[in-house]
Figure 1 (cartoon, rainbow, N blue to C red):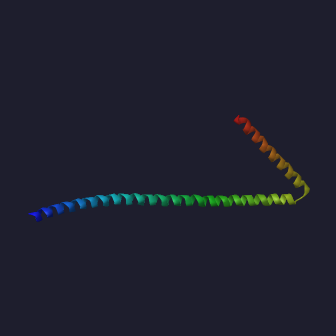
Figure 2 (figure 1 turned 180 degrees about the horizontal axis):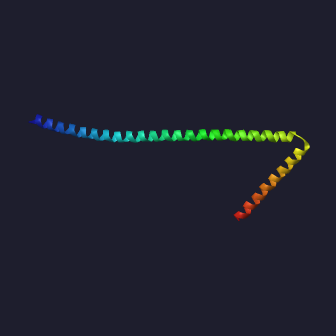
Figure 3 (figure 1 turned 135 degrees about the vertical axis):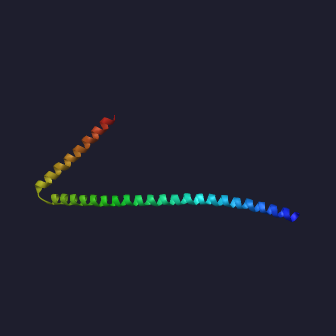
Length: 111
């Protein structure tokens, strides 16, 4: 009779352990699914950021081209005759005056 009781208690312990293992396996599967989803989201975000950076790279290259052209034209104007230097001085003074005028107006409007 003791052997029968021991088998029943052993079977109930096995059933409890089996149920606990199933619960832990489901819990682990849920966590793995969540991690997989996070990894996918991170991958998608990294791809989006790479596309954004590639776009910025092309924008910077185009801006560099524009600035290089402007510097070349400016250098050519400076190296040319006296009349162009006078125009360059007038334009420079005008830009400085426009800057200070805008600065004064902005300060005045903020008060």
